Image (cartoon, rainbow over all chains, first blue to last red; front, side, top):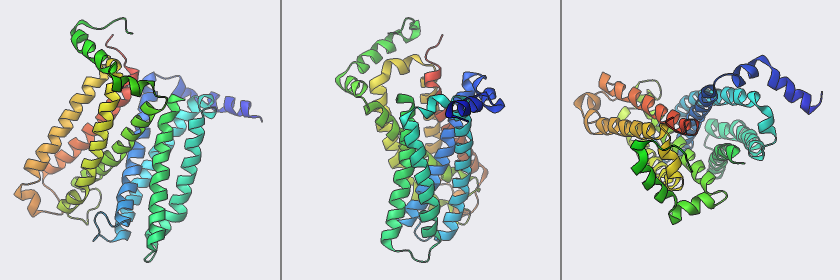
Length: 157
Length: 175
């Protein structure tokens, strides 16, 4: 199956048709859900990263805080991914040729990798080194902020 | 640029056009990436400020961080939230500067501003009245009803601000 046929299959699917054929405001609603999702996600990450640096709530145990933040992170990520997929499948062709979308996808993958392979280790770790902590925080925030900036560029390119 | 400017907006629209045609407005609009970057930073400031504020509101509702006294959560997060809102405000002014005429014509824009005003008043009322009340200060773990209502109002109002911000390009005119 070539790329064209794959895109057709996606676009013609029942779910994609449901989204693309409905009112413009459904699309707007999906975008709002997407934004609220990543606000939750970024909020939880800002909270936990600032805590890692010791800049907020320094007396609060890290494990408890990161567990709470993880709940918000999962909720925000789920909301953002589900709404993002629905937005994508409605008009996949618009997105696959858009370089900002490609950049966003790459940064998103990198952000997830850093999150699960590095940041979570640092959060669970027993006294991680300062260097490791700062690297994890820096990469986490840079990549996720990069995702949102690239996302905003999609409509401009 | 626009064929139909409603009569009641004529004066504001004329003013908005001069704003848009000012040196700063033109500089932003003409630069290839300035507008996109400013809007991106607006979004990041929003994610930080509103993201942390949502966490505060959820704490007021007793949903997260229940082990941390409310006053502590407020005290620790407040400076960051204020900093985030400063970024949102500055970038928002720049965005307005470069697209004033377009924004003024959308019904979503004044609604968004009005909702920001309501959210701001809610926050002010909480900070000056509810937050300083004996009920809140003496019960650092769970909160009286008015504090929880303020938290819910904050969540709702800021979500609506985001909704109407997103609706601006979808509602370009009153007709």
